[in-house]
Image 1: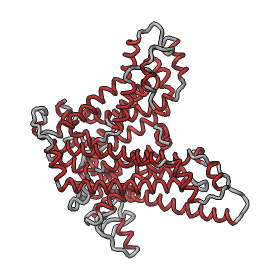
Image 2: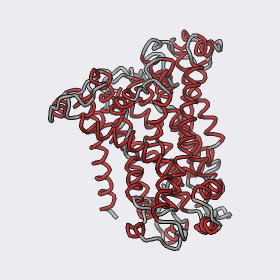
Image 3: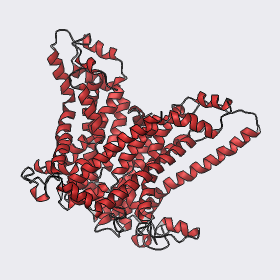
Length: 311
Length: 295
């Protein structure tokens, strides 16, 4: 994706203005990147480094004006966090969010995209816009709406179920259903985004391939497994990474809908991180956010390996 | 959206196969419409609920259509609560983030696409790396930094870290680089021969050609900033600096927890402008996705 390093070190070539010294044109070039570099150093690289250091200290909210006058506690924060039952619960929940959420959104996203890509479909744009709609709306607002939809006695979901003769539970107040309810709601919101990406991927597959396969007598399923899936692999990899990173940060939904309850059954790592922050425990906050960072990096690498090895 | 139609042709003769296909097409539409209903119903319910009284919203079984429609919830939002202020805050912050992102991202994108300079490769990697850093990893040290800069509960404190985050200049710079790379070098070379400096080339030659990319970036950035939650939640410490998502979330888990009509009216206030913008400008969304190379 980038130019090879040699191209950059190339001495002033034909694209260089004669008579203008190299250092001056470099300065002009750098000035174009200056806003990004300043923002990056101050608000991104700085905090990432500070966060790493903080994760080995006992920084608390009371030390906020003198963040460098704190004591180093070694790995204590990490040991405490990993041994904390609430964190363990949050980690298990988050693993469920990621696995179930990515599977649901990718599965439904692909199904709808394949459906919309059929030649017979009318009003394709209308469907695409409709399915994508939830993704552009505020998660917080949508979570408020779903909290009321899923309410035990006054919600629409149980009203519809009661028409079918089913006595619906308290979706958000019952420990057996709360986690699943949040996953379904968030999948409802996220599917459209993956659908649009899959649709773009499907449309880049030449129709002649399918025609040729049909002439050769390949059935629908065979065409799917031997043409669609292999050619869609780069798209699937990318969406799996994007979706996983998104689900790893699951936060707004439990914040608004369950406050992590009942009995921590919907607590996510991101929400736990925020709670530690609001209690003023900055050392553990930094440790947890680094563990989350590590998980994101690891997951990305694993997924790249996984998808590449199959090609 | 004519590009969406595949070039497959259906045989006009009625064979058993084409009859089966037509029936398959019917079922496909039934499924797609069913799915669409599942997607749309919560929105319809939200709008209908926002004009019900809270007493009606709290009755079991729930009603579908409001019995006596009222705008009381909206009146409450803007008179009893300070939603005009939250609306203003959200618009100001999202607008500033968008303007900053358009300028800084196109500058960065131009440098990465068309200029040669030492450190370019490193910069590109840093830009891509930033895309992978979620807000949850940096918000705590950012808060410590922002409070030492005296910017807690201020507009710059809300705007600058958002601009520096994953959906800010890093994303925008990537999108603009992809787009500007596709512009012909000859235009730039010709301007250089005429003696134009890099900034003249950037403002007079490159930017006027970036319309579609800038439009896509503007919409994506504005929406992301409008809906942004974690950072405004952390940095806005008094009600007068709340953005809409922060206000709704904190009211929903706090003092207005049981005032369902008010909460639904609040949700409509956040969601409706976005839905309207999206429906009018929807083609830019898919263009933005295509431009970042996701194909």
